Image (tube, rainbow, N blue to C red; front, side):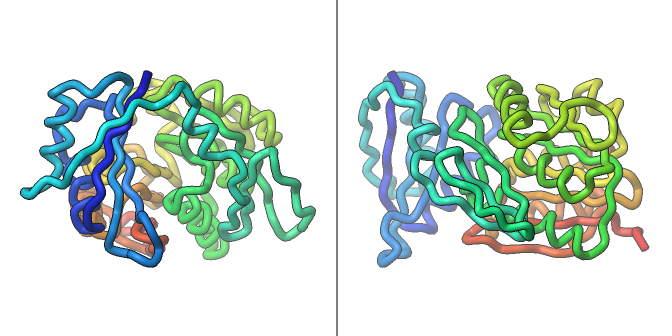
Length: 301
């Protein structure tokens, strides 16, 4: 039975806690964090929630306490019923529009608008449904890339979740080869199922998507597909910084990197890591508190 730990405090304190978690070496990945505004009319009041697979241990409580400066806000614990919380959170959610894309669950009908590309992403045990600002921002940025003339032939979507961003890339560049990867084994069958729902062919040829389970770029299948003209990584600021060199090594000399999953306050640290790896900022989108970055090789003409 899973549990939830909750702390209500200021926006600044929650954002600092999320950033500190990402920078914490050896963080227990069983503790899943999320932070959000409690009430739109009280913009500075935020809630940090931590989910644990069982009753919180002393070590888990201590890890959460360590994310805050003194005075640490009260942290309340509650046992949760056996519910698929990802599925529940997706029930009844409205479709989202990002650039030329519309993302909906099977509960909603297609609009039939020829100007839109629609993707169906059901509730599943994988992230990347388009509801989060980072995923929607990536969809918008991919549309911008296409309109500005980017024409990648080889695309990688690292930390794919549901496969959505890879689907969008193949829709924009149907002659490209594409590979999606994630460290979570749950994402493999989720992506395969979503490919069927969205008529995305699986395979290794042009116009097809290959799916692999991999930890970062350290995987023979990804290394064999490199170098990439476009690498997409919608993950977290800490891993983005840690993998800057690996991503740079996997991208072609004139290629692009699309980064998301970082708060706006974390942007400079991420940009600094990629500047050292040979990339410069080409364009950025801010969606809510999140930055979406399009980076290009510094020496690209």
